[in-house]
Length: 421
Image 1 (cartoon, helix red, strand yellow):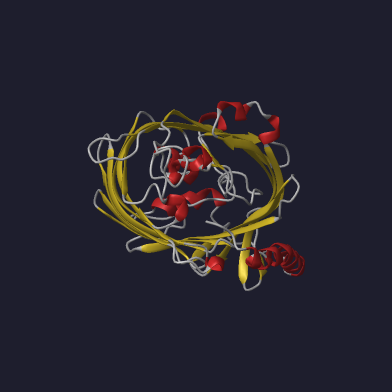
Image 2: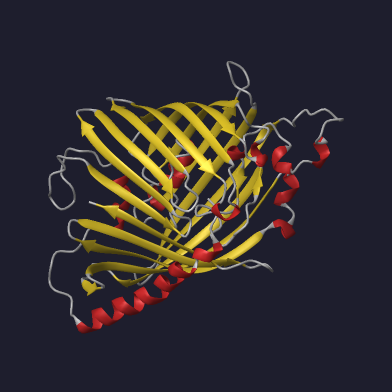
């Protein structure tokens, strides 16, 4: 989603005022000797928590508990309600953007077997033009997917996805995708990272991911490392209108440093070994050689790699797409206080990490982009990741201010709020 520049001020004010308020409260009120709050490592548990069982505080989970994610200034809200009945997991998910009015709804049925897990998902997504343009442009994608996972051991698993998407749009940039069907299969493999939404988006449901500002502080995998890789084949028979081959991989590593600090690095790359150029009449209204590069290939626009966004380079504020992409991000977590109780702003703050961020990457439509140093973008930022309690809910709050180190780039301020019961 595109950020609205006029709405960047509130996140910046929050980033500036929150640490001061928490620090003052912590100095005035000594922390009571109470039980420690659940750590941020449990953040991913909210993604798939079912109805039965016991949570980390010994409370029964015998009813549906919703989880909520809010992203600012993009205006994204993600609400999920889950229920586990026997071996069947039911989940409803609604994503809404209250800036542009975009809305996506998912309904999932997940069956847990002895050796494999099966999931059927139906979804309907409607995206409108940006609000500042006051346009009537829209894009609607309705689809159905089947996802199966089978673990090989505690850390390793293989996934298979089959999906069919129907695209209807009057957006100018999607004029070649209108009333077409994207049918594809995906084979993925993972080491570690079972609950990381970015890694799972590579091997599974890409459209349903929640973009995290930072990597959760948790056990990533064996030796603190994880790997997700997938091959996607879009075929143009049996109702499909596109043909392409997409290879994508991401590796991440956590390094433990002195004084309870930690450094988490990610490296993401992808290529399209098979991509066919659009065949347009030379005497038509749009000569093929004059089309933007993103429209010159028979590939749905949403399948192209992007360099901007919360799960790529945080400081890049323009849309950069490509069929070749490579980027890396590094996050240094510096604890301010951990397992503490600091009442401030009407809530009980438990943990606070300062985060130093850096990113570097490139994207384009030719292999030469990897060796062209001028095409790479460097961005840096300062952020935080904190948790606080309010009644029975734990809230995870993350924020960052980042900027790409190139002329003309604006400062990007992003904020995320997540709930966990």
